[in-house]
Amino acid sequence: MKPKIAIIGGGSLRTLGLIHDWAMQGAVADGSVVTVMDLDGRRAGIVGGLARRMPEVRGRDLVVEETTDLARALDGADFVYNVIRVGGVDAMERDTRIGVRYGFHGHDDFGPSAAMIVLRTAPVIQRLTRAMEQHCPRAWLLNFTNPVPFIVRIVREVSSLRVMGLCGGDQNQLWDIPTTLGWPAGPCHDLAYRGAGLDHFSWSLELTHKGRDFYPELLEAAKRLDRERLPYYCRMSLDVLDLYGKWLSCSAHCFHWTHHDEMLDRRRRDFEAVDVGRESNRADLQERMMNEAEQVLAGSPDSPFWEQPALASLRSKPDLPALGIKVMRAMCRDSSEEMMVNMHAPDAVGNLPGDGILCVSACLRRDGPHPLRFEKVPEAIAPLMRQILAYQGALARVAIAGGRRELEAAIFMDPMMRSVKTVRAMLDELLSANRPWLRAELLR
Image 1: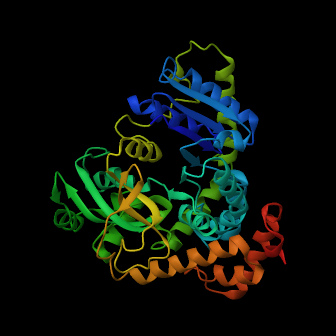
Image 2: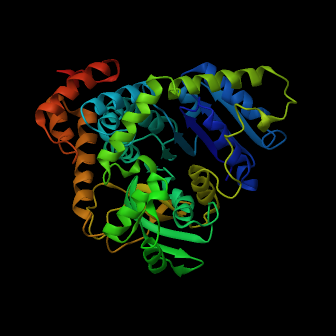
């Protein structure tokens, strides 16, 4: 198999890391074509031009091209790698600030800001699915656009395309557990896990260290730790471990559901730091890095590639490539390698409904992911997870065809929403700010 890979929304420097990781996969990458597609021709040109200079690509039987034409990118593709961000970082940051003012934590995967991303992205995703049905109907759509499970749910609602959602946040525990326990810095490859749940709210239902069940040792060690000396995300992980007896796979802002108010306070402080100039906002930082990368492209092609400041942080570790690269490698090799993906897996978890998109350990084969089966997620948290899945479905349906009234009802299914009056006032502001991207029915 000599795959063609279309990276949609690929005009980001992070795409260089993906292309590097793909080029490092040996024979699997030989003869492949990687097409970087972005509506911003300047950004696509910078990424494509730098990728062809990459030492791991030069001299290889690997073609990297760029385009602003979606049909050209998709024609004959085997994998469509979706990383679009409708409205950009600016819109996400603005919506997050609005939510914070009304008392709600958010990011691109949780809260009111994530709901707006779903509404902005749905029309674009529907156009993408129609184009795929015309140009590459048998391709796998690998969705990285957050909030991942909502976007996957929309694709399944409007098409019969093969789709899975990818995040990779579950790999954080290879660093977080060693940090929590005072081990040498991660990643710790002696740790292994299998799990299930929701994206950014999944559980390591099986956790081993050097092949042995690690939970007895972890639970005992947790009793002796001086928690106040630990980073906040380690302290939160231990809080959750105390409550449910299992390790929550992700960290950082992924504690939205269990530490909402603490995360809200952290988000407020983040914005205060930007407002007083202690930190740069993400949009300004990304544009500065892109300008630096453009200067690199204009310079000598013989300059040491990865020593350039704009590029130095983009490579993955050789033994831990990007999740999407691992997925494509496993499918091309038909290797049955296990990893966690977001997918429709009706019988994967005994105490979660089968109609939503779950994050679950799966074997990746040539024909796609085959989910493992688990008896249950922690029973005490399962009702909350079932409610979140109901919200996932309701918001996806509204994003496709609903109006303002249906949106209010769907948003109020988010377990963090507590006041109809507050939700309506917040929606007025959010919908007004997002007017250019939204269907007219949502604005009435």
